Length: 389
Image: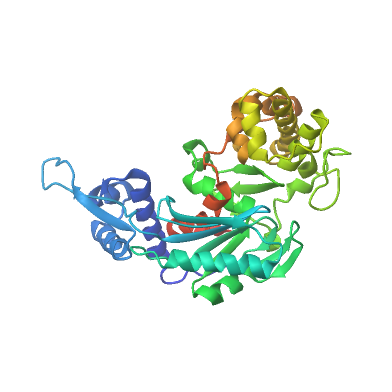
C-alpha cells in the first residue's frame, strides 16, 4: 500500500479541471464547479494556476443566464509545449507541438545505424526546436521500435539496429537540459489514441493498438491506462507464432512470427513475388499508392497482409476481449481495400458466442509514431495515470 502524499487531492482536482477544459471548451468556471461538485473557490484557484502555467486562457464572455456573463476558458494552444522524437527503422522525425498536438515545426532525416550519430543528429534537431519563440517546452518524448524500459530511460534492445542497453533518456537529457520520457513505439501510439484518437477509441476503457509498419507491435490499454508489464516488456505480440515459411524474416530472425507475415516488409516481398521481379524496389507508401490507383498485384499484396494481420488480431480478441482494436500505420490509407478481408478473418476465428471487438483504423494521421512521441509529454499534462506500469 502507498500513503497519499499531501498534494494528491490537489493534483487530482487539477487534472479534473484541465480535462474539463480540454474536452468541453469553451467552458466557464461556474460550469466546471457545477459539473464536478468542486467548490467555486477551488476551481478558480486551479484555473488561475493553469493560466499562470500557460495551459489555459480566457477567451471572453459567454451567454448570460440571468446574471453576470461568465468568462469562458479554453486550452492555450499558442506556442510549443512538447518535443517528440520518433525513431523508426527508416527515418527519425523530431517535432515540436502545442498543447493539443498540432505540429508547429518538424525535421526528418534517415536513421543512422550508429546510435551515437543517430542521437547526435536528433539532439541537434531538438536544439533547433528549443530556439523557437513563444513556447514553454518542459520535456521531451522519444518513441523507439524495440524493447524499452521507460522507468529507467533505457532502450533494452532495438533489433533493427542491434542497439542494446542504451541510456537514451540520459543521453538526450544531459545534452539539452530537459527531462526525457521514452517508450516503445506501439505503446506511445496507443497513448496517443487514448488521448487524441477518435471518441470510439478514447472513450473505450480497454483497447489494443496494432501498429503495422516495418515490424508489428501492439500497445495494450487496460482501464484507460497503458499496460507495460515488467521492464516495459508487455505487448511483444509481433513475435507470436502464426505459421511457417513467412515471406520475410522477422526482426528476431525467425520466419514463423506474426511480424514476418504481417509487416510492410512482408507485403513488399509478396508484391515482388507476384510480379516475378526483385528489381521493382518500391516503398510501402508507393505500394499503397499503386493499390489505390487500381493495380491488381499491389491490391493483392495488401489484402494478404490484412488477412495475416487478422489472424493475430483474432488471437488478441479471444485472449483479451477488448472493446476495440485500432490498426495504425500506412496501411490505414488503404482501409477501403483491406477492411473486409481483415474483419472476415477475425469473424471466422472468434468463436460464436464470444464477444468480438470493433476493428477501427487509426485517425492519428500519416505519422502516428510522432504523435505517440509527443503524447509521452502531452498526456502527462492531463493525467499522471496514463503512465501506469
